[in-house]
Length: 491
Image 1 (cartoon, rainbow, N blue to C red):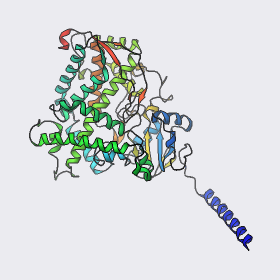
Image 2 (cartoon, rainbow, N blue to C red):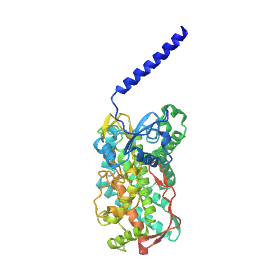
Image 3 (tube, rainbow, N blue to C red):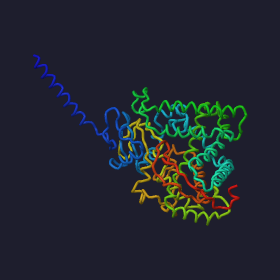
């Protein structure tokens, strides 16, 4: 009897397995993108190295321009070509315009209240409208040009005073962009806190770019195995203290009344707004402007200098254009771009191609099932656009690994989202709203560094990367800078 029961159990299990296999084979194929087989529990997280965009680039060489990974139990699609970027950012933009609810957005962005992490919906649309009407419209940018000119002249004068000494370019760039943005957004009385603010900005970009295990394996989130959430909470306290200090100053009338903070505070509890703007919302939007404007522009210029100092011919060609168009008696101004200085503009574009500061554009999130390029993408899938891979796509760029500004000379190349091979500001609904301001800062800063100084290396240039939400050179440059224009321009 016992043997019969054992035999019956074996036959039953085998029969069940056989039926399950038949039913599985009869199910319609899901037509999922190709990708590596995930491990139990961790999925494909083991394939991410210390420089994730490079790890994903190497995987795409095997699996193609669109591939499916699992981070923990969650599906993640990687787009690694201009065409796949177009599919997600234009063809199906509305479906993928939201953001995944990651810990960074919860703990460092006032519970997803900033433009970076807010889910797509009424609040985000209203915030974007506020940015365009109160910060980045043409009239406001023109109004603040005086500040940009003053800070740029101060920056160049400081560098001029250090003639013959090794200069840490990164520190000076960050100081300059931070003081410029701060004066535009919160006023000019907070520069005593500039070092503290820069430390917070650096940490914000680092923590907002990490792959936090708890985001992808939720039952491990309590343990905070990497310590990231603890750091996020500590950073939030410091940032919140700074934002409260700024807001209280403005409410008490101790700050200028023509800056962005003042404009935002006037909107708090405004009954005419579609979505109520709370004090925390104001702090989140201020934070967006401070961190975004300070870091990205400085980083693009830093990468450009890293590249051109490795190729003296580029420096010589740029200086020839500057001397011919600008002359030797003035600095480069915003209205000299882009038409009058095409080679300088080409250097900026080539830098953005080879060294996109957002190597993985902000993560996109599928709000419904969608078929993309013949593949089924399920609701809840996170999509990462690998701009670093796109800039190295051999089908789009000749000699993709070489830094060749000439590839852009004589061509009309869009940098604002319609050319999916060049996405420094993203594209579609989630395109960076500050692109015009960013280009003004980057173009004039780089042009004047080349126009006003002879740059001499103190050390070899390292092109190693340091990953974060923006990707910086791992080793900052020290440069000896010798002024080359008349002395009165540096005073």
